[in-house]
Length: 286
Length: 137
Image 1 (cartoon, rainbow over the protein chains, first blue to last red):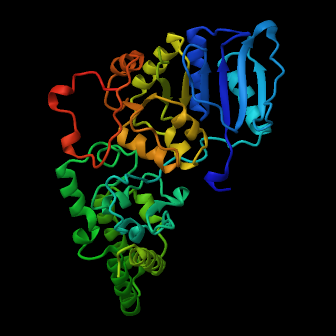
Image 2: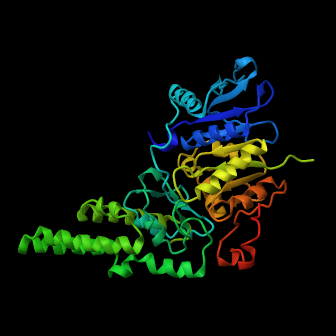
Image 3: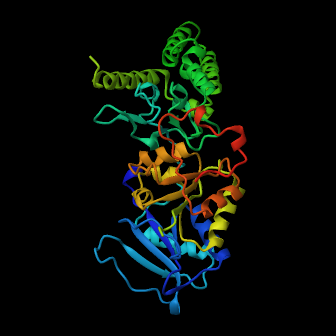
């Protein structure tokens, strides 16, 4: 199931009327445990506004008066509402209660996917389609207005920031990246110059990276036919990939998991065609 | 008198980019304050799945968000089709500010919106003198 189609369970730690307040330490321990397991929690003490409810499944936890959780339901029938008394439960047991409810409500289990994907800064993006043209994994696409967007974020390769390197405007962020401006920090002029240099992983490797791979593939084929030396060809490819990894901070495992050079060329041409079609369809393009 | 801004805390659970001691200290202070607040495991993950909860987190009135870079926070919400209100959201960056700075800004009832508007360049970066100042939010 695609990430966007999964439902989530929202937890409310209720300390308002009809329930007792938790001690600060218990509240902190329970919250930390649940956050580490991927849940979103609302601490409802009544002392400050919180975000309104939505239509997702809701589990309300609390030290309810008399140890009895209230019997209540959403009058509109839109929210699957559950209550659980947590008197006497430590944080791991509270987490077990939550986990059991999540499982019953068929809500998503968190932590199965590391959230690594590009985030576009549309204040900077010029819709040049470099990223769409570059990405081999179909992460990018265009909307009805031919505007670039991230369409398949779960296709993105964990820890690979390569597409942000090809963006001439430093408009692509990976918020979990170690350094700016890719992590969302402000963009300096020096950053822009550096990014421009990296646009072309091409310049560093002596041409468009895919052309280079295609060329190498052809050379390799030629060598195979002449020398039948597969080790040499592999070594050539590895050298190329190491250079690419260093210049773009691309994890070696991502590069080593790339498909065959022929498949790379096919996908690159497909991506390039998509980008060209999107550019051609932009308003004002003749 | 208007209600104080809501508080949203992001635990950045799936990465180690926010210093662990900062995250823990901010969450601990929030728990000790007795204030109501929303806490999420990871805004990135919610954005990726276009979690409808982001809509309610963005649309419930003025909000202070303890997370990471304002530019990243702004566009993560936007990516999930839940844009934050430009004039009613202040982001506190736990990647660069200390827990004490973030906590003080959260406790301050005044909201200082700081989402970037337009291209964010080096001209928008705080001056060297401002580094020691409390974060704006």
